[in-house]
Length: 232
Image 1: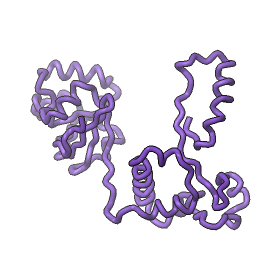
Image 2 (image 1 turned 180 degrees about the vertical axis):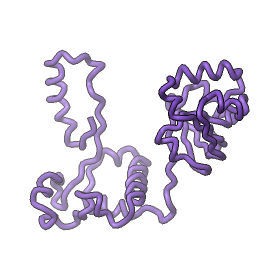
Image 3 (image 1 turned 30 degrees about the horizontal axis):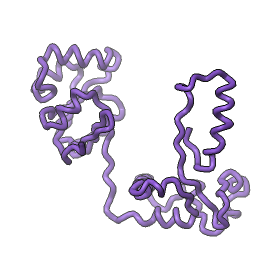
Image 4 (image 1 turned 45 degrees about the vertical axis):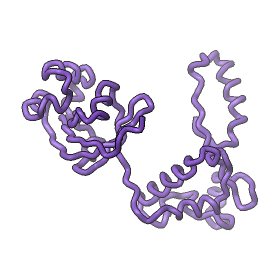
């Protein structure tokens, strides 16, 4: 459940209803509360009421893009970069994330992003044994199926690998695509994918992760190099 901070007290009602339905405690929803947005008067900004009254009823300081992101005065990438930057700024001190913010302050924050572009990294989860090899600089080729998200990766892209709370940032040095894992290992150095396993062992492990219908999408071999040292 992702709600504004004013919903914190409403959790009691939700928990009571779920308890009445005999919902196991482990199945109770995880809650994420975001800062509450306030109108210039200090009251909670009601987006639904404003939409009903049309844009002509917008109070002072409420920019049209706050109700309709398609009218943001810039590109979609620019909007996403500004939003990510603002959230990152708030999280530099966690107490900011539990405060309420007026629309005027949010508007100011959204336009305070430094002019240099924010470079977004592709996020990838990975098993611990492979994560450790990447962090140590011993695994320099990452293998994935060529699904829609991998097709967006190109030479120079950043990939942030995550595992059990740890992360490591890498840069893509090359992108090579193959039809099958067998063809891939005919051309890729086995040790660069996993220096601790033979070709046959790696094929067996990879096919435990990716069933035939996933391999049918094709295979992509990503050359990677460390950008920043691991933060752990």
